[in-house]
Every structure is written in structure tokens, then in C-alpha cells.
Amino acid sequence: QKEVEQDPGPLSVPEGAIVSLNCTYSNSAFQYFMWYRQYSRKGPELLMYTYSSGNKEDGRFTAQVDKSSKYISLFIRDSQPSDSATYLCAMSASNNDMRFGAGTRLTVKP
Amino acid sequence: GAVVSQHPSWVICKSGTSVKIECRSLDFQATTMFWYRQFPKQSLMLMATSNEGSKATYEQGVEKDKFLINHASLTLSTLTVTSAHPEDSSFYICSASSLLAGTNTGELFFGEGSRLTVL
Image 1 (cartoon, rainbow over the protein chains, first blue to last red):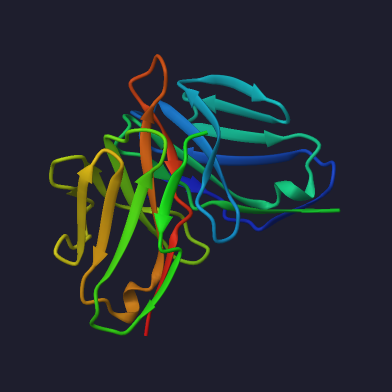
Image 2 (tube, each protein chain N blue to C red):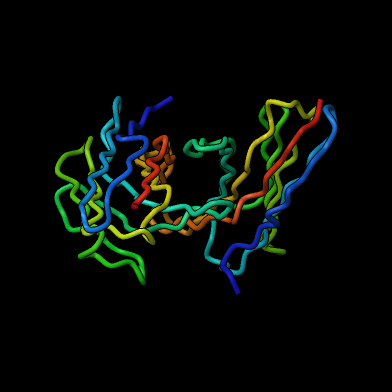
């Protein structure tokens, strides 16, 4: 079993839709949870960072962490074509052991 | 935000040659840098963790004699793929860690990646 599981998609939604991206994990020691966005042929960029459980909101993006279920989510409201990218979840117990999900490829159609 | 520069962005080489990729943190000092490889439609796979002034820590299955990492300063780490073969063709990405205020963990800033094609 992989430490971090993420559905690779692809996921295609119409513009304006609410997007839900999810990851599950098996290592209960993970306490730092991140979502990265990666455009084609580019390096990932940090979108959201959450420590331990709870919700965090930043503009159209909301990150949720449920440590009891070992489940994290990223919601994108009012999705835009510019949101089309691959979204990677990442998590770590400390800074030096970050593990990434496979990435979900999202396409937002105009 | 912090900037990490990676060079070259793409390189084509003949089998058996060595290729060096540079990763620089442009506006902050990075005590730790990470190297990943990414195959098409797959996630990042951590290859090694590089700390300034010490030997890199390699992940299981990564050949340290094949992938030489040097972290000579707080702003520069290099990855050298020695005697490259076609199976080494991949997208190599570095990241540098900058401590988040009030935490003991760092935000990672990624380079743009280097696409290596070995003929």
C-alpha cells in the first residue's frame, strides 16, 4: 500500500463548478499537509499548507484535513480555466520526509 | 515569493556522458535542498535530501554513485547524472526549504525542472 493515495483522474469540469480533490494516507505520523499546483512542464507551486487537522481557506481554495480518517481535501470554488493543472497533495511528519500523491489532472472547460 | 532557479531547463545528451543540473535559491538561504524525478503522468519521487556542507541522504533504491549531489553553499546544489543511459531520461526537479515563521517545518519552493533526454 502506498503511503499517500490520490486518484490521478483526469477530472474535467465546466467553468464555475466546485472541484473536490482528495488524498488518503496511511502514516499516522503525518502532521503537515500541503497542496501543490503543477502546470505542464513546470515545477510545483505551493497552494495551501495546513498543520494538523482542520480547515484553511484562501480565496477560492479551501483545504480540509481529517486526521482521524487520514483524509485530506482541497476544494476549488468558482473554478476557472486557469485552474487547469495537476494538483499534488503532499504530507510529512517532519520537513525532511515529504511524500507526494500521484497528482490529479484537472481540466476546467470554458 | 521565494525563487528557486534550475538550470538547464532541458538537455539532450548521448548515452555514457555525464550531465550536471544546478539548483539555486535566488533570494534566500536554503539549508536543505531536495532532488526529485518525475516520470510522465506520475508524481514526484524524492531521490535525495541535500544539506549544505554534508553528504546527501539518498532514498532507498537511488544509486548514490550514479546521481552525485553536491551542496557546496547555502544557495547552490548540483545533481550530476553520471554515465547517463536512456532509462535515466526524466524530469528532474529540485526544491529548497525555507523555514515557515513560527514552525519547525519549511515551505518548499520548487525549481522549474530540468528535462533530461538521453539518446
